[in-house]
Length: 348
Image 1 (cartoon, rainbow, N blue to C red):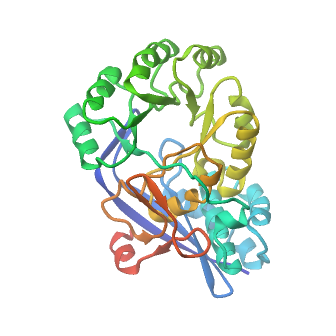
Image 2 (cartoon, rainbow, N blue to C red):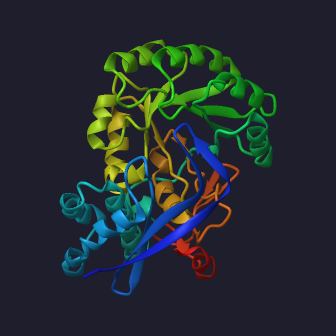
């Protein structure tokens, strides 16, 4: 038997955050608390207009499962995910939040970290990048200079001045750059931009074309780009991994899009076995969500887990990302917990 409690938060960002299709100053977040035998697990998902998920819609989806959860005998997260997938097939965001909470709960019941229970070893895990959103170039430079100790910066692009933006940022750091066009380029633009970006120390390009772009365009970019291309919007669920072979050099998995840690592990293993690079990214979210995603670091080549770093206030403690270095929590499960005095201020 499990009980469910939902916590709604409005998370203020340190700076306005802009990508090719949206601008955010406050991120609305839903934290799911699963309670079983006096122990609780936490999972998080954020509101996302692009994918059509609001706090209300996700809460409604989760409430629709409450009767099932109350009568469910909790064993392990994968079994629970298998049962819930049919109930939440149209809402992977809600499914993800429950799955993250279930992994956290299971780890606490077993007195182990989630990555241990996934049979992963915390060895040579990759550092995270720090994301710089689209803004006037002086503001982008200022954001970079506020975080001078990071070794990797992810630059959001999708403007008419993209190469010039990277060229100007390069004057202020020797760090690795990764660029994310968020579906904002054509095939011709991607190939031309890649040639100019490579000597500027850019490591790869994330999702340059819209997911719905013609297959021939994706394959042309795959073969002709001077830089590797990593799928994001083109790799949402498990069946997408196979579709990315021959179209992308790697995949960026977002837990909220695929339905949680349970399918994410399978997707990452499939990508690795297919010779693709692996990455896990995040939304702008609290330490609850970041702590869960961090459990997958042993499976990754690249990580983008700076979501909580972008916040002005965070309702939780847990896994910490310090200048890109990911530091584990000493708690079991995913390692996060809400801090009441902070969480209460951010509740909506």
